[in-house]
Every structure is written in structure tokens, then in C-alpha cells.
Length: 97
Image (cartoon, rainbow, N blue to C red; front, top):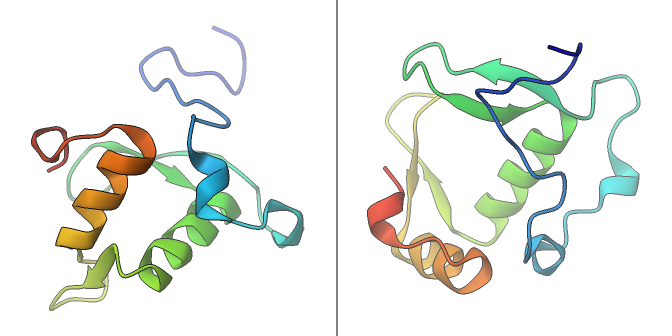
């Protein structure tokens, strides 16, 4: 396996529809890795980490697709988020946990 590539965690660098989210990738902080391989400590599932993951998450909060949960690290997908994911990326509610 080549360094930096994980066969069990395929990610598209620019999935169809990503441009519609208007995440300004040219403004990502240079002090932080743009994309990083990461497994969520609680869920034991892969997620997008690094500056791009943080920028994307901030944008999803701005769009009100996500809302904060009771605890700092908990987020919830809103009804607007379900619709946005379906419209933008073709992801249906049954595909999102």
C-alpha cells in the first residue's frame, strides 16, 4: 500500500456537487494539513479531517444542514441537511446515520 492512501477509506477529492457548497479551499490555513486520514474515536468510522474537513463542517453549519448536539463533539443532521445532501450529492436519508 502506498503511503497516504488507504484502500479501506476511499475519498473523492472533489465529489460531484462539491462546488455548489462554496467552500473556499484557497483560504484553508497553511499551518494545518488540508486532508488527513482519521477514524472517529466514538463511532469508529472514517471521516474527513484536516483543514478541508473543518471548512466543510463550518459551511454545513452556515447552511443549517448541521446543528450542535448536547455535547461539544455531537452534531445532528437537520431536515434541511437531508434535503441538501439529496439534492447536491444524491445521498438519500437512508444512507446517512
